[in-house]
Image (cartoon, rainbow, N blue to C red; front, side, top):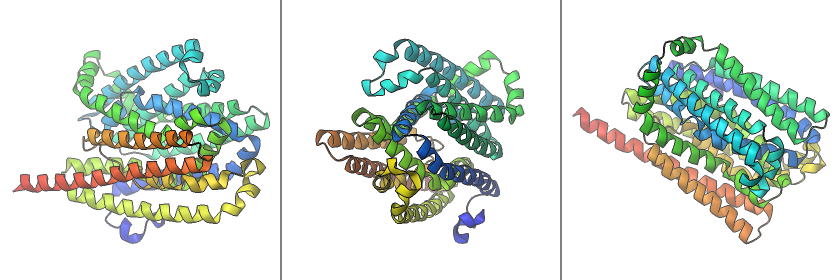
Length: 435
């Protein structure tokens, strides 16, 4: 796995625990993303672009709700002073998640036709899957927070492989049976719950801490972290809204088949980036927490820049691959996907921004969620403005996607420089305190 990183960058990058976590998560991502890429030519012939458009809308809506459904207590679990406090945050997050799931279920099942925008009405046919998806994703987040606290990402990695295999197998089976969009949604839901069952079995220590909790302890810990939780929730909601805006907003203007092309293109091009990016995201989060607790801000800036250089190289290589692969699009994916090649190239700025900046985002560890909030508001405004302009001036769909992607890249660049400048201020403050 060291070959994933140049030797010069790998040497001295973080602790042995950081590198071990990176290895196991990266290996899992390699396996899961390789399976996804191998299965894509099969899935593109079993499902139409419109089916993937429905799936993308479902994933975007549930992801947006889940980003706020636990009050992001899962983000705060790694920073809790004791395992007992972390377990209390787990329960508090689970309680909020249960209430949100119940509320969404009632609203969607009872009043979905009046609540959902007209262009989202297609989701009404799959209404029961929405609350189940929210509950599953929320529980996955809470358990992942516990594993990050333990700096033990091996169970999370195994779960990712099993989820990928399950999702692909169920999708192909239901595609052969002509289930359409329902097959893709059902496969995603089942894979999510399959992963949760594995995470539950792999965390017996969490169960021991949960059994010893009292209600007053849970309430006390929740109150202690309430301010951070509310701010983290706002940050998380805006972050996911800005990242999912391209699907959520395009779906309001363009047909499901066009949205499906964007979702499928992103799925293809994000896969290689995800191999490294998700591994770095989870392991760098734990590593950053160690550096911040030690007040080693120079080491934080050093490792932040090293990982950023690595991701810049990966992003550049991905762009060259996308350009070289253009003649293969239709032969590989079928005649229904003739526009896919152009969409892939138009999406590249968005992929670059997400690949280089998002994996190393650690403002929550530095307790600077407010800065994250401003950056996400700006990126959401930029993306939204691009889509409004595309609709108003009736741009060609490919040009509309390119405008959105460039807007997203600009927002990510602002976030990078905000974190870099913050490091400088923290280094100056730490040096001043040490004199």
